[in-house]
Length: 120
Image: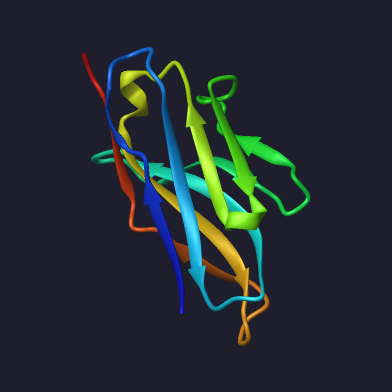
């Protein structure tokens, strides 16, 4: 059983910052790619940032220059530093990760989501 637990969401004013964390736990051999998605009310879930095992990053155009994805391999944790937040960034943020387990080379798991609200 693999779990991803997110934390760090909350209410922030426009222009403010938040740092999301997502910690992996359970039985797995390794973690491959990790990433963050978000879903606003009435909208489809969209990718925000992704991090490959080799360290390459990809960002949605809407967050480039403001968000940074990073990873602490020792703690099996992925972070999303969000700066200069805008009202349109408000959404439920989900982390995901691809795990190598005893039964799959690449099994994707999702966290439960954390709410980010940007409002004055």
